[in-house]
Every structure is written in C-alpha cells, then in structure tokens.
Image (cartoon, rainbow, N blue to C red; front, top):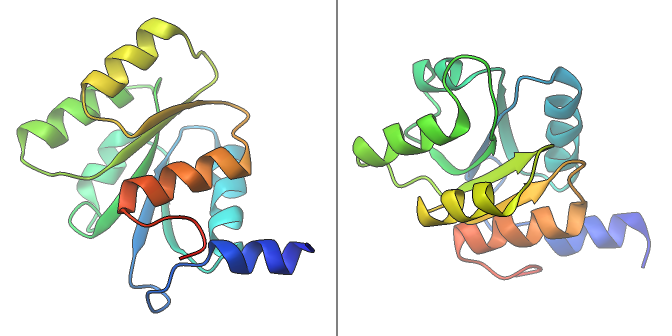
Length: 140
C-alpha cells in the first residue's frame, strides 16, 4: 500500500473541518510534525504551545480530541486534564510524553485519558488512539 492509500484509509467520513483535533505541546517541532501528519489525512487541527493558550482559545468547545503533552511549563497536562474534567468538558485526551513511565500512564488513564504514548509518537498507535477517542474504527 502506498502512502496515499495509507492516508486515505485514515480519513474520517465527516466533511473536512467538521472534526477539530487540538494539539498542545511546548515543542514547536513536535507541534508542527503532528499538525502536518493530521493534515495529511485531512483532519482539521489547531496547535497550542501551552495549556493556558488552549484554554484561552475558542477551540476548547469544539475539539473532539486533544493530543496533550504531559509535561508543560506552567499548567501541566495533568493539571489541564483535571481542570477540563472539573469544568465538565469531556474532551478525549491522548497524552504524549518523552518521559513515559507506568505511574504516569496509570495516572493519565485513571484520570480518563484514552492513551499515553511515548515520544517520538508513531503514526499507527496515534491514529488508533484518535479513532478510539472519537468512537470510530480506523478506515471507517
């Protein structure tokens, strides 16, 4: 299967831009790489360099999935997860981190996260987690 066929298999059936995925990571290169990956499969994506920037945006209310760095300056990923939960915002979260350990994974999942993925994030596990977060199987 070529790259175009692989990308097509991950496209969502919704119209372009209908589903908003938000990415929060303080590393610009990771934000841009993930943005490019999401756009390669025609997903609408917005990126933010901090939890505070995300909270101040208009994307909090329309994000169907949040890809969130665990360790951020200022408000951490865990703190953002807690705040969203306390505000009654049920945004599925996929944590990403360069410092994955079992305690962090357990805490993230107990807090309601869909998945915790180690950086560098691989395409297939990320796409599977996104589809799990939005309730659609890959390729559907």
